Image (cartoon, rainbow, N blue to C red; front, side):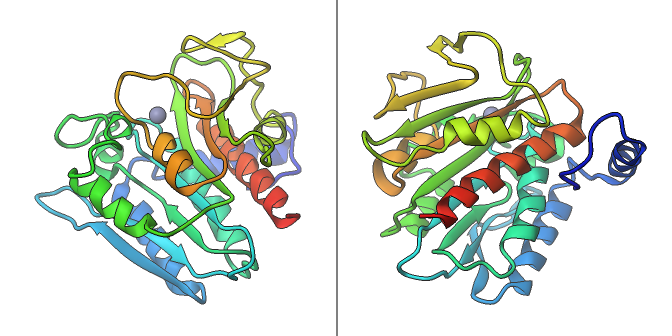
Length: 271
Ligand SMILES: [Zn+2]
């Protein structure tokens, strides 16, 4: 996806037309094939299966890239909710351009956490559970495998990509350590080149400033444990959850996710 085009350009319209005619936003197998081929094509990268395919439910896996020990590590996941495809597409596009020739620390990239949900365009998984409330359940097969993969790792930044059908613009939850590096404001502003930021000063009951819901330490939340919480408490200095408005153009939503990621990793590169 080009970064230099605006909606008035015929080049932009052609890019949208091509994208919309060729996307496979809800084909989980195509997403997984794409991610596996990416892992094969990158030196020091492997495809790690977290939960194997079973009874028509596609596998969950991760691209794991061994980077330089003294450089910042990066975690990325997409598609925890199956009806939020833009993060999945944006992350794949980002990974294709960013991971080849990667010169930073380790990368763990889960391209599609809920493949069954993506196939069926629903939020929950095959057993009708919201995976993004289950990360406190260490006996859940996915969470258990995920914790095993994450064991001993420490990331400078962790990003979880989501979408919100209620939102009118992009927004981001940022959980950070006091005095630690912050990414949310700059990454949101980069995404805002594609889709405006959410204008409400309160989102999901949380105070927002120009789309940013920032918090030093874990917020209060009693509806289960989202992925962002153990990411922050156990594995990452800063945890970011980026959301695009689901009713916007799929092409622009995917590009907004890609922009967000390029900004975060650009900051890591300067660390
Ligand atoms: Zn979501």
